[in-house]
Structure formats: structure tokens, C-alpha cells
Image (cartoon, rainbow, N blue to C red; front, side, top):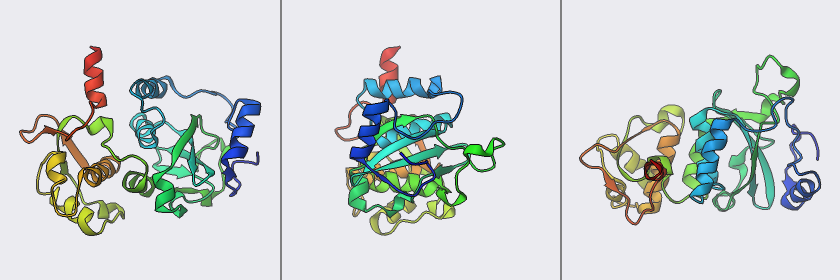
Amino acid sequence: MRDFDESTLWRVSEFERVRLRTGESGFTPLEGSTVLPETLLGELQQLEQIGQGKEVLEVVTACLRHREAALLCLQCEGLVWPVTLFPAQMIYHSPRDLAQTTSTGLTHASLLSIEPPGVRPPGHNLYERVAAAEHYRPLLPLLWLLALEGPRTELLHEISGTVAYRAIKNPSEDGLSMNGALGSAAERLRRETVPLRTIAQWPGMNVERASRLLNALYLVSALLATRTHPAARSAPGAARGLFDFFKSLR
């Protein structure tokens, strides 16, 4: 497989052939550790236990929470998108902008693998694996896009359960915009602290759209989720969240 800096996206069939032959994705890892950090691995294993180990948005959220860089190989429209997250720098590396995919393609995106990064972030003192500058992009727009248009239709486990929500800033401050019902709901959330079921009943909203909005606000640090507010309620028909799963292990 070509160098990670190339702008070519590989077909899933080629990716699988390389992985079958070598046991790896084909993207050369950096010298040093060939495994992910233990803290991140631990959370990924917990996600596996509840059947969420291949959920793109859950895995992305885990990387953000631990501020750990990782290479995610995503399948989208029959192609493999190698996306390297750098949460500490709030950027990501990809041969092409993931926003170029269609909404339908992004909705059906799936996680093929997660592994240590194959490139370093710009400005790193060990510059030999810093890729072309044009392949690094701001992370916030990607998080926003994955939450609003990606495959996950339910609340992230981190913010699910018996919770009330409030928006703590306008996403437009970070250059993120919404139109129609989502925009109105986001603005209303700056004035009210309410559960998911209430948001789902607002004009133009439903449970899925409300869940996507809350996930998006959470990922861009624009959401306050509280379990102690009098308005906190469980999501309609929702499964137990990761918070409740951890409680059950105590």
C-alpha cells in the first residue's frame, strides 16, 4: 500500500487483502509503540462489552476523552478513509476531507480498525513522519459532521441515562452552523434545561434528531449534561448508558 501521505483512497477489498496478508492495515506505524495506550484500550474493551466497540462516534469520543491520538480506518462508500485524530491539537489527518462524502455515505460509515497513528502532528520535534500540511484539518467540523450525519442515531453512552441538558454556548462561535429545526432547538437549549424527551417534542424534532443534536453539542464542548437537575429524565425507550453500566460493576 502507498505511503500514508498519498491522496488516494483505497477500496475496502484492497484494504482487506493487505490486512489478511500482513495482519495490519497497511499504514506504516511510527517507530516505538505498536499498541494503543492502556487507558484508551481499557475503555474500548468496555465498549466491546456492551456491543459498541465498532461504533464510530463512541470510539471517536473515547479518543477525545483520553486525549490520545489514534488512526481510525473508516469504511465509507466502498472506500477506506484513514483518519488520524489528534485530540490534543484538535486537528485530524486524512488524505481527503471527510466532508467530501455524501450524507448517505457518511450515515453508513463503519469502523474497520483502530490503531496507533501513522503520522505525527505538525510542529512535532520528530518531523520525519509529519505529513503534508494540506492533509491536516480542524477537528471540530469533523466531530460536528459525524454527530449530525454519521451512523449513530442514539445518544452517546457518556451523556445517556437520567439526564437533563443545556447548551452552554452557541456553536456558531466555533464556525459551526445549523439551519431549521436543529438551529432553533440549539438556541432554545441555551435558555432551558430539559431532558431528551422534551427536546424531541419541539417543532421539527424527534428522538433521533434530538439525540444527534445533543451528541454534536457534547463533542464540541457546548453541552452541559447533568444528572442532578430536577428536570433530569431517562430517554424514551433508551437502553442503559455506559454510566449505568459502570455502576452495575461496583
